[in-house]
Length: 500
Ligand code: NAD
Image 1 (cartoon, rainbow, N blue to C red):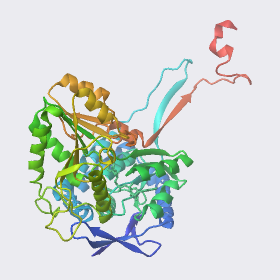
Image 2: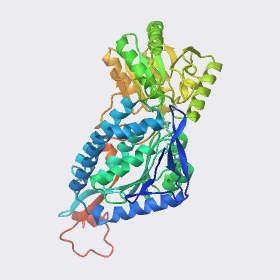
Image 3: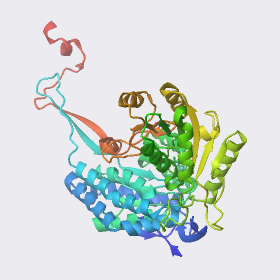
Image 4: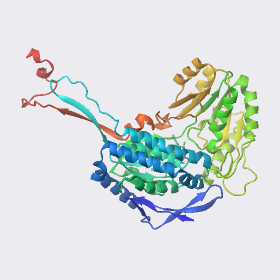
């Protein structure tokens, strides 16, 4: 059993409450670590440390180049520690070690990308209709940023926030999910090796009501970068609005997987399986609605069933395809969704229950559901579990109409060999991301995010750093002369000097 401390102002801290809570291993269902139960007082301490660091010469006195080098060095340190961080994260969320270790190795790319961008962000010198006046813009950091992360990919989703926030010159207070705090604490400790001054990176652990809410409401927090569910996202947005904080929200999804009859069915099958069963379906971009053109429906479903039956379930540290769900609470929620689907007429042709071989941990079967209709809850609500509900569609237009008939708009996958139809789909489908024969590919230089109930704003790429800085416009008149008392920029004299 490991007992963790929070990380505030460059050092490990016990919680002011003097209490810790259990972090559970989803494979065994038993506690493996004790996590500090933070509260508003710890938040106050962390925000104060971050605010002082933001104003300190040690941080704000750095040139953008020096800051960028520090961010890149941090990425390299994370790469060197990827295996250690991944092993901790698997204990917390039960995902496959192979997926998590590759995510941890890949994190270095975002620190490279934003570290490199730190001194390549250029302002502008707009033309100005006034003789001799110099007008230019500069970008400035915002101050203390709150980074709030979920349990499904804690470090990866933190890297998407932390790297641009630091590269832009901000300081951060991180609030990880109460289910998966340990890897974030370890990451913060490693930041010392990169040379970040104390207070630049802080972590307060605990529950959303005791840590998350006071953090987002804090007056000195200028930006909230949140990844999580709809309910938390809405509350965070409302809290941020009180002080007009900048808020980015990466929320849930119900991404359609549309397979047309001219698709490469082998490729589509692989994309559909990894899209819904990877991470036990616990990803925001999971392809959790399957729309099959009726002429290939039966063949595709047969092949999907036979592959689904081969899914190996077990400990994420072993050679398996699917680990457990993150918590008993999540499993209960997901199982209720399946029961409701069955009551509404859907049929699980494979899966639908719990694998018999485990009498511990929070395992569920990989499941394929047929006889679904687009008005069922399973087809409209985020399932965040390993279930593929299937609907037939007759043609392209019906597929797009159904796909767009959703409260979410995060991503959509299309499988077709007809690229002109594929391109039409990219234009007509709602969603921040559309993949055509390219299931779930991502790009650190491209924007990630959604609209409708899937969130506000984008992470990654140049847009990812824009949300962590402010633009200032500057005017300098080197030949400034005294103006008339009633001089005004849009007076007749100014606008029409020849008509005096
Ligand atoms: P969650 O909303 O319950 O919690 C996310 C984080 O927010 C946690 O740290 C939690 O403590 C905190 N939080 C919750 N309510 C808060 C509040 N009112 N104020 C401040 N902090 C608060 O989400 P979760 O269950 O941890 O994660 C699953 C959800 O995350 C799913 O809906 C999934 O789709 C979404 N997600 C989205 C993306 C994306 O990029 N779009 C990526 C991963 C996960």
